[in-house]
Length: 319
Ligand SMILES: NC(=O)c1ccc[n+]([C@@H]2O[C@H](COP(=O)([O-])OP(=O)(O)OC[C@H]3O[C@@H](n4cnc5c(N)ncnc54)[C@H](OP(=O)(O)O)[C@@H]3O)[C@@H](O)[C@H]2O)c1
Image (cartoon, rainbow, N blue to C red; front, side, top):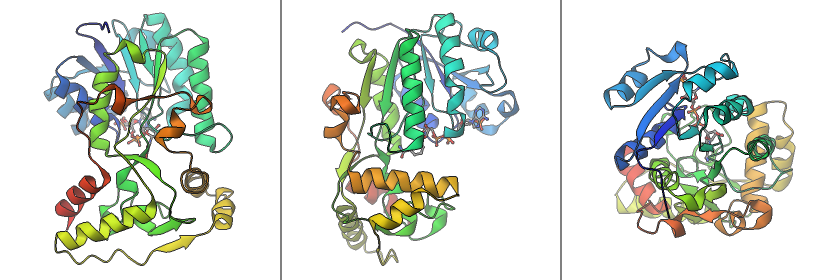
């Protein structure tokens, strides 16, 4: 396995929920010169100052306003571009990919960071799939990375302010909802583990022009509740995380068609995870799901959190 030494790696979305941990993993590896592409309106944000203090170079890059020439200039000298932008900005990626190609970027990592699926099930996945196809079509080097569902969205928390998305009703951590039987397993990851996988993947020729699936555990919702109760008892906490509420397939299908885009998107996800059972490591490896390389098999030395370890960490810190 050959690899480029001292790569320049540019992250778009470095202050976000995924990007923060990607940058952390890259910094911890001490293998890269890291650059954050930041929109001008965010350059004075404390999060950006913190990145600067940690040795991250800051370049101005406005993914929606900048034209290809400006973006090409921002990508000059960069070996790998990693996109971790908010999902509402993913349509800017064909332009970003064109600019990366012109700038001689060797590997472009698209804004995926999602779950295993096939086209025709979730509109957001379909958009991401089309972007992957576009990147392939222009002959730009790529790696597509999915990570399963964030564990923090699966494990029940007692109070909304402890949730990643306090205002979102459907996510299992907030709603205590069991979708369907509760016995369908889904792949999940602690966000804090994403960066360590990325630091390996971008230094590995085996992953160039491949799809890689990173994950920490695979559990059903019923198993997750058993873990939550076990950890609660073990820590001697008395948490009010019940009762569970079963959401049947018909309700999921109806809410997938909701006029509220977040409710619709969320229930498409729940249908994919818990009714269809798309989001598993076994599926990710199938040709129709993109023939993923399993990151745990590629990097067996990496220590990642199981769902139980994540829950113990979460409840110890919160309650
Ligand atoms: N697997 C899962 O369970 C899961 C869960 C959630 C999301 N995701 C996926 O993860 C990926 C990243 O999402 P995220 O939730 O981590 O992102 P996020 O926290 O929403 O991050 C937003 C980042 O995008 C930047 N940004 C926001 N608006 C922008 C704009 N108009 N122009 C340029 N930059 C802008 C922000 O920079 P500023 O500092 O400038 O605001 C920030 O760095 C998405 O593809 C999403 O679908 C996966």
